[in-house]
Length: 159
Ligand code: SF4
Ligand code: SF4
Ligand code: SF4
Image (tube, rainbow, N blue to C red):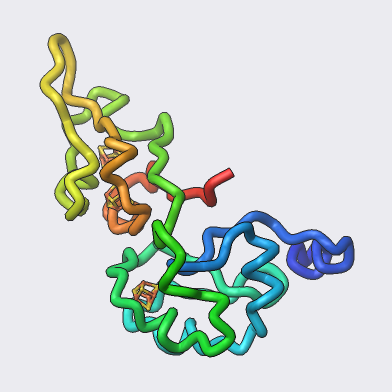
């Protein structure tokens, strides 16, 4: 079995990852400051901080989203997570073609999960309403990700 994490470590490269909120940017600045101590992961009450490629923390929204409670940044003594970094997350939600609404099934579950009201379903003539993301309103919190019955939403790391 190929261990992708080890392989990219040996090559000196890391797969792109969605870092915890307030992570220093660019990612090299974050990984330079992060000691891989795991304090942010232990501090997260939602369990959305996981250990990712190279032992660095990343966000996993498959079960829940981030509430921006700040506990991870508060726990980060080297300030790799720094509350002065704004916005906390630059990534936004992306909806894939397997979205049920795009297949003519009336589904608005993700919109209900979005506290920021960034997912709207404008009425559409001749078909069920489709999700439309307001990228300015999306906080990248990931609450929509786990709500989707067909795993059609992701919050990929910003390019
Ligand atoms: S802000 Fe809170 S919920 Fe979000 S990753 Fe940090 S500790 Fe977890
Ligand atoms: S919850 Fe998933 S399937 Fe339903 S509208 Fe949103 S993206 Fe589409
Ligand atoms: S990532 Fe958060 S703010 Fe953005 S669409 Fe999903 S639930 Fe709404």
